[in-house]
Structures are given as C-alpha cells and as structure tokens.
Amino acid sequence: MSVDRATVRRIARLARIAITDDEAARLEAELSGILDWVAQLDELDTSNVAPMTRVEAMTMKKRKDEVTDGFCADDIVKNAPAVDDHYFVVPKIVE
Amino acid sequence: MTDLTDLTIAKAREGLRAKSFSAEELTRAHLDAIEASNAVLNAYVLPTPERAVDMAKASDAKLGKGEGGALEGIPLGIKDLFCTRDVRTTACSHILDGFTPTYESTVTANLWAEGAVMLGKLNNDEFAMGSSNETSYYGNVVNPWRREGSDAPLVPGGSSGGSSAAVAARLCLGATATDTGGSIRQPAAFTGTVGLKPTYGRCSRWGIVAFASSLDQAGPITRTVRDAAIMLRAMASHDPKDTTSADLPVPDFEAAVGRGVKGLTIGIPNEYRVEGMAPEIEALWQQGIAWLKAAGAEIKEVSLPHTKYALPSYYIVAPAEASSNLARYDGVRYGLREKGADVTSMYENTREAGFGAEVKRRILIGTYVLSAGYYDAYYLKAQKVRTLIKRDFDQAFETVDAILTPTTPGPAFAIGEKSGDPLEMYLNDIFTVTVNMAGLPGMSVPAGLSSEGTPLGLQLIGRAFDEETLFRAGQVIEDAAGPGPKPADWWSKS
Image: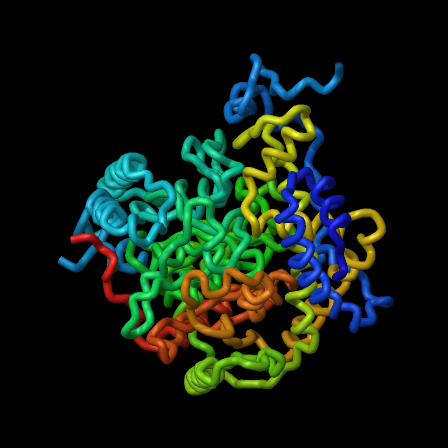
C-alpha cells in the first residue's frame, strides 16, 4: 500500500472533504492501486527533459491593465446559498 | 416528407433555406422526440422547450428575410458543462445544485450568434470525470444501441454520454461536448457518431466548467464528418477571455471535406497494438488502412514509443488540475451548502455531500500528488513525460500527415460492467488520452459494427491546428464505411 489510513485522512483534510471510516478504508485501497500503477513512470529517465508547459510555442498574451468587467454585484451573489445585501454569509470565523 | 429528426445538419440547412420546412417545425420535431424518449434514455438533464421554440421562431423571421447565420434554425443539444445564461448548469454534480449562470460560455455564445437553437442541457459524467456516464448525479444515460438479441442496457460512453446518445437517437442534429482524455471520441465510437476534439486552444474554454485546464477542449458530436466541420467552424474562435485560446484564423473546415487523401501519408503506430485487444478491433483498423490506401493515401509505419506512459501520466496531471479547479466549490458562492459547526466543517460537509465517489477519488489523488514533498515526484514528472509524448508525435509528423488508430479497445459495455474497478474504467481511454496529453486534434469516425452488432470507431490524429486533414481523411472513411449506422428505435413511447 503506497498510502495508509492516516495519509488518506490527512489528504482528505487538506482537500476539505469529510470522510467516514468506511470511505477511508475503501479509499486507502483505491488510491494505493492508482498510485502503484502510475509508479511505472519511474521506468523513464526524465532528468534531461523539460516539463511541457504549452502545446504550441506561443508567447503569453497580455491585456491592457484596465477595467473590462464589474459593477454586477447582483449577478455575483445571485447563486449564493446565503447572502446579506451584497455579502456572502458564512459561519462565524472570528469570535 | 422525410423525418425531420433524421436529417444531417447540412441537409437541414438546405431545407431551411429552400423553405421546405420551418425552423419551428424542425425544432418541434426534435422536442417531440425528446419528450417520447427521455424517460428511457435520460440523455437530457434539462430540456428547454420554450426557449427552443422562441429561438426557432426568431430564426424563421431571419430566414424569411433571406438572412441568418451558418447554423440558423439548427437545433442542438448542449452538454451540461457549458454555462448557459439563465439556464441551470450543474456539470451533473450535486454540488452545483440549482446553479443558474448569469453569463454565457464563449462556445455557446458563438453558436447562438450563428443562429443555432438550444434544445436543452445534456447529461454527462459528474464534472466530465468518467468513461460511461455512470457518475452523473442525474443517473446514467442509456445507449440507443443494444447488443444483437439482448435488451441489456449499454453505456453511451463518457463523459459526453448525453451528447453521443442524443445525436445517435435523433434527439438533436448535433451536440456540443468536451474532451479531457477521450470524452468526445470514446462516446462517439460507442454510439456510431462522429466526435472531434480540436487542437488545444482552438475553442475557448471560457464559461465551460473546468476539469483539467491544460487538457480540456470543447468540440462537436454529429452524425457526419461534414456536420462536424460545420459545427466546429461556428464553435471555434479566438477569445481574449481565455489566455490559452489560439490567436489564429478559423479556417472554413467544410471546404476540406471531400478533398480526399491523395498525396497524404497516414501513419500507423505499432504501439497501439495493445495486449488483449480484440481481434475485431485489429480487423477494423486494417480495414481503415485499406480504405485510405484505396483512396490514394500512402501508408507508413510510425513509432510512438511513449504511448504506454500516457495514461499513467494523465492520472497525475488531470486529478492534480481537477483538485485545484474544484477547490472553488465550498458552499459559499454558489450551489450546495451543508451546515457545519464552524466554517471548516461547513466546507468539509458540503464537499462530502456534494461530490460523488469518482470526483472525490480524483480530488484526493490530485491533492496527494500536489502535497508538500510530492510535487516533483508526481506532477513535474508527469509534465516531463508529456514532453516525451509530444516529441513522439512531432517526430512522427515529420514523415506523416495524420495517424490512424482504433478509438477504443472494444465496443460499448453494459451498465455496471466496469464501474467496480476505477483502473479498468480508466483503460478505456488508452488510445484517446495521448492526444490530450500532446494537445493535438483527434477525431473518431464510425467504421463498422462489432460482432455484438454495436458501433466501433477509428481515430484520426493530426498535427496541431490541422483539423482540416482530419476532415479530409475522416470523410474518406465515412464514404467507405457506407451510410452512417442508425440504431433501431426501441425507446420511443408510442
């Protein structure tokens, strides 16, 4: 097993996904299976290979530093589960 | 009068211009077909009949004045990954419950600007993660094709399973789809339809729910190669809102259709002969080679030695990018929110309830490979392997103009048959995922039927931004394979 139960719990916490004990057990096997399988990439020597960053050589486009959008607060909060005026409402963070 | 739902986009365009029928008649014929089938096939997660009729009437007004765009009055289905203004868009995930965008994706905006009519939103695997449409929150889609002598429901492929099923079952003339590892081409192969993944950057990703941003690309699923050319021209554009969108002119793809393959060299990669591949897939491939040869193409063996590493590197890159993209679903700004004692448990409970098992699996893999100390060993390594995969293709394209492979290792499988083992499901994309890793265009064209009586496809892979060669060679295969395969209608309620 390349990941153990504690690792599953740690990454689930990092990913902000609550998981049950049953799920943790299942994920331990599944994630290990997938990670063991991707380990075949170790067969390849990539020490002198540059990582791929784009499909075609293209210079990153830059746009003018100007306002192109905005003034649509109604639209932005329209789909929120809890809203007060133009604010998103979340559980209390600071006591 | 011919059945209006059986027309190709090209024929419907002629009929509309000749006023043989109206856009409203054409749209209503499709709305009736959806109404009669959706309870069984589940291809649409949200039909939009009122909007469709309004759009069709507007098209009729334009056509009446001799005006209108390239797709004026053509009824299309839209994969639920495309944001559509004022029409619910959920990527078929519970976590986007009720999300109704206040904006329109660039690709769909381009289609409406050309006069297309929206019939509704099509089912897909949750966040486009899957190869069978079984991970959708709205339930699986049933393939209109069945095995000979069997009623067992088959998968339509995935993730664009609603798109492929709707096109095959005559529930739209064409559909939008997206492809991150094969999600346009594999469902097209499973349903006897044409599926084209354009070069990365050809279509804007703006307003498409993101899965893996360095791989995602939108494209059409249609019933003919010509129809794919017509749709792609309308979908593609340079979009300043997507910095990876290519600042290149969009060719008249339709002009390439019918130009033939004389003078072209087609590459055959030996590495796509994988262990355990069904003999009928090899036979189909040989048939495709013979067809292209007979039409005047030269055939050449090529080597793509890093092929076997494409899928394992994909399962690092795609989950890594997905874990970042899906971090935005936190129950604050849109979609589902589950209660929690504090803000962190609110996030955790929302994401636990909102994401399905496959999505969670990929987020966790992605979180793991990007976590402290692992980045170099996994993500960076995978991006280096991508360079090697791309280099294989670059070298092959020095001597060939396109590459021919099978689209899938086998025909459509039964619902539930492969959903128990994630790795077995992933292997479905073995022939398609290389193309995404290298950012190249790829097209699946129906090429025959399996021994079970279900469709099989051949895949053509082209140079970056050379979709035109795919349309040339694809049309040769379509012509040689004969009239497009059509499933017998068992699904319409009478």
